Image 1 (tube, one colour):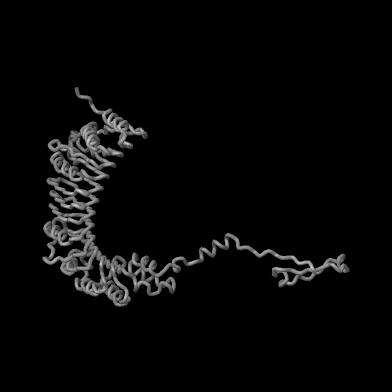
Image 2 (spheres, rainbow, N blue to C red; image 1 turned 90 degrees about the vertical axis):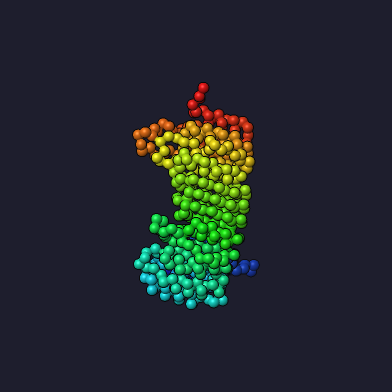
Length: 447
């Protein structure tokens, strides 16, 4: 039985063997040497090593702080348990996010918020503070607690403030918040009864000289809203998510982006000479609309629950966006309206010319009246290149409301239905003529 080979020989890279017997007496014989090739790493081994690499820990510290800044503070603290690299990283984060949704007990939430502020690295700036609480009256915060947190955050260079609190707590904070000269963005969100409250009246002193972005979701008295916007001379972005007022009058000379959403407005006046982007969603009766926006380039307008009496205001809305290059408009009549009405074009007001309009999307009920108005609008858009039309079927809930009067008069599309129509290359005269012919195909010819 042969003995097992020496393991040191088998695992060496070079193995020396004695000469064979028939060459033992040969003087020219030399020792034979066999070289074993070095073992290459397999693809599976390389992939496993790549998976074991901690790429997150290899990031530079400023990127890690950027990632941590988007996390709630209590989650960022738990991140310290993953690796030594993350230990204490939350204390230098430029943001502080206090969310009470995970902590139902008010004393515990206040205690943790105080500890987060006291354990922070005092040499690290605090740029963003976000405080969120529930709207339950049983868990109201003592206004002195958030005021103390704001006082301690102010010397750290606070620039962005987001508050989502109960309206009874927020009212006590407003005099201190609106006197924050270093703020660059402010978001106030709360819940108020639109029927029981007439609106929050803001304090007399408002100093927001550096404010560039403002987001509001609360019930404000109309004059207070106008005064708040006028007190921010460099305001560029305004987001009014749910304006619960009957009147809005905005005078913002440097405003560039506006989002206006309301179900209660009756009168709207916008004086924004530098406005470039408009998102406007209004529902219900609209008695009056005035807009001066000569620099507007993109607009998305939604007008719903309208009647024949609102046609004049709709005409003013279309007149105010005549300089845009991209327009998306949704117009729907009130469900109580029995017969189709003209909403896109006001009979008493001539349709404006759209000298820069290149892309147009219209979502409405394309009965015969609106189809004729679309042809008129097409004639007033000399550089229009793309036209998308989408039919909205109204809700038929009355026997007097005939469904055939509200049927789509759009041409048949490639899918075999009459719900959508798309026209491109309308700058070519031949394509524009074909589009007008297709839109006129299903109209009744009156002699």
